[in-house]
Structure formats: structure tokens, C-alpha cells
Image (cartoon, rainbow, N blue to C red; front, side, top):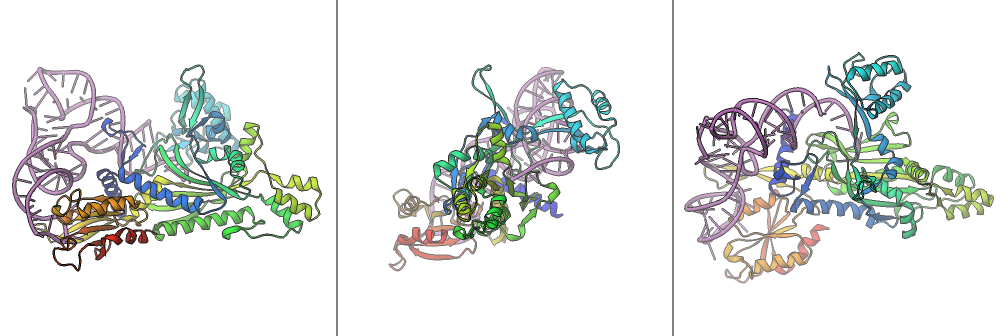
Length: 533
RNA sequence: GCGGGAGUAGCUUAAUGGUAAAGCUCCAGCCUUCCAAGCUGGUCACGCGGGUUCGAUUCCCGUCUCCCGCUCCA
């Protein structure tokens, strides 16, 4: 079996496990499903929340200068025109009928750079005018630019389909009656509302640059072809931080004026850090985050964008790649966005998004700069460093890294050993922290000591299960499969019927080592909590 | 969306132009039961729609979904 086949097998196993045990399944199953949409079941929702909580604590709660936002999932057309998505997400695609490849029309091979853009505009107009057949379009384009474009891979002429427009955003009619309705879009990324709300959040939270706004929420993209389970969906959750810092121009002026630099809080870059220093800072923070999250290092890679692939406004960008079952794929993007987004919204809305940096102004004046000049220098659009992670992708990464199969001895007739499926999830992420399993059903039931312990753990804030069905071995395996780190067994010793020594104690079994320790019932909750932190 | 493959219980696999079989899982019960043991009983399927036919899970068409390539970048 090749590596590709083996890894696809892993994906199939994950999909099966997720469906069987209620982690994730396809949306609208009874109606044969809807491509690119998934529902998170009882265990999935817990795992998701645990991942999200970890991110939120790491990025927001433990920091003085990052605040949260939870914006609407839909926004007016103007916002998405300003962000560039109405234009950029509007790809015009053609298929090569000979090679079966698909291309954006502006990425065919042209004799001059301008012609690519001309061709795209020509195609958009042609589609808007009602379209036609292939001959009509390609002959029209030839008349327009003087020749037929070529296949960029082969460099040869080919037969292409008519251009088709793919809008990757979900367009919505807002307002119940047709005439009064205005056009809106489901947000294609969670960061745009952060930029739009920048001023209200800043003023309301009394934050000053440098500071960040974080948001976790749903985003929607009408993907041409959703693929690879949770990797590419049409509805997905993002965990994004937009962090706003002083522009380099101001920092240069502070330095030139001889203003003394001050250190930043919590090991952050100081008052005269460049925007690239901040980019490096967040990149390092994100690396540290992944180390703590527990994803294996050899499955993670940081890949910088080569300069020629950067968006025109971006100073630097890199992606965090993870080796998913289907191959390496992007988990997170870390981008230096310049002041592009705030500038766009300032232009399109006609409102001011500039920030007045009083500290900078006073420092410049104190160092002898003219007051008006200092004020001008201290009034700016902050530069934004973005970190943007896919929650569903993290979910898939965590699951695929945790999935393992053991061989264990078995009592099954005719078999010596059995395969044990175990999710080696970090206890912090495990959807179920512990399971209370009375050794025999006679030791269980409502009103039993075992059940009381289960209730106590729930009240202590630990998501736990109680299971007294069938054999103890089977119940252990069921918990292994969902990654429950600890199984608590209430046995006949616990009752005291075999002597006082072990009375009121239970065994706690470790998911990974299968080893058991005896712990007094009264200490179980604390025992678990200690190991979760 | 285009091209290639696929769709029978939760899973793995049967059979059939005449109302679908099994193993595992699952559920209930028995068992002083510590790693999917054993025993008894039970639930659950021809993806959906249309056509051909006396009759379709089986043949045909469409559709939906899944897998592989083109494309994608959270």
C-alpha cells in the first residue's frame, strides 16, 4: 500500500469514527446531504469548544491588549465591495477541453500583461450581456486583443469552454419584500467586521495602539468544490486576531526625533518596534501556541509566501501547514496586511478610521518637533497584523494526530489479539474528561455511590459519562475511542465488603498506559482537575 | 462545474426482475464482570425522483452524496 492510500484510509477511518460516535456528520443526512456543510454532534461540539477556548484564552483572555468581538454573519454589499471580495471572489473560469484543466481566464498565457486584465473584463461584460457560444466568445476576444490566449502549462493553443463566473460569496436578499430588499453577503471571513467595527471597539474598550481585536465565528464561501471532509467546507469557523500597531513611518520619526524607546508589556515589542517586528512577534506567538496545543512538530511547517505571491498590499505573509490525512494543507495564515483594510473602509464609507496617537504626539513635541507636524505624524491608519486559523481544520488536525490503533490481548473466542482504537487527545481537549464505570451493574444505578460520584464530577464542571452497560472491557474501549483520558471504576473493593482498606476508593485507569491507580472517592474531582491544567 | 469511479443496516460483505442474508456494532436482559469474554432477546438497509414492466434493490434516465484529478488557500 502506498503512503497516499494509507493516509486516505486514515481519513476514511476518521470520517467513520466521527459519524459513528457523534463528532461530526454531514448536514441534512436524511435528505442525502448537502455538500460542504457539516453538523457537529455531542462530542464534536465539546471538542470544538475546547479548541476554541484554548485559542481564546491564549490570544485574548491572557492578554491586556486584545479584546473580543462577535459580529453579525451577514453584512451589506458595500462592506464586501470595500474589502475587495465582491471583485476578487468573482473568478472567471474556463476549462481546457483537451487537457481537462481549469484556469482563471486572467491566468491563461497572453502576449502582454495588460491583455490578461482586458480578457477578464471582456469576459465579465460578455457574461453580463447574455453570453453565447464558444466561437462567439473566443472570436470576440481575439478581435479585442488581437489573438487567442494559450494554455499556460503547455504554452499551446487549445479549445476552451466559455467563461463562467464563480462568485465565492453567498449573496443574500435582506428584507422580506423584493422591492425594499437590499443585497448583502454572508461574511467570507470574520476579519472584515473587525475592521468595520474598529472605531467602536477601540473607543468602547478604551484600547490604544498597539492592541488587537479577536473574533471566533462562522464564515461562508461558496466553494466550487468542497473536499476532504472538514478541510474545505462552505460554512466554517475561523479564529482570527487583527492586531493594530504603529506604522513604520511614525516609528522612523520617533527615532529620528531622538525619542527614547520603551519596552512593551508582557514581552511584546516596544514603542519603536517596526511593523515587521510585530509580524515576527505574532509568528513566534503562534508557534508557541501550536507547541502547547500538542500537535506533533513533524506535522507542522511554516511556509513563507514568496514575495511575488504576496497580495499587493501585504508586506509579509506565511502559512502554517499541517500534514492532514489527505496531504499537507494550510491550517493558519499569518499576514502583515499593512493599512489596506482600514484604508479601504475609510474610502468606501467616507468615515474616518484614523487613530490619534497622543503618546506619540507628546513625545515628538517634547523632543522639539513643531506641534502641527507632530499631530500630523501621530494621526494615522494603524497597520494590521493578522493571524487567522480555521477551527474545523484545527479540529481535523487534532483528530488525525490523535488517532491511533493498538493491538491488545483479547478474550474473544478464536482471537489472541484485537485492535484497540484510541484517540490520544490532550486531556484539555478531550470532549469527555472521565467516565464513571461501576464494575458490575449491581454496583450502579441511580442512588449508587458510583452514580453520586458521576454527579459530583459534573457539578465540578467536568464533562463526564456514566456507563454501566455490558462488560467493563467493552466500556473501556468505548471511552478509548472517543479519547476519554480517565476511566473511573467503582468495584467490589470500593464497597468495603472485602475489607476496610480499600473502602470508598476507586480505580482510575489511564487511557494511554492502561495503568490503574487507587484514589479515594473524595479526591477524584481534584485529582482530575490537577491534571487538566 | 468538467472528466473518471462509487452508493444494499452504524460498519464490512452477500443474494435477487417477484416484499433482502450474515458477522461486528448498537439497544434490553443474565453473569462478583478489570480491558470489545459468554448467554438470551431486540432495533436498523436497497441514497432520492422518474421511466420501462403485471411487478424494479436489480434495467434505463435524471438528481443528490462520496472518492480521485483540474481548481482552491481558513
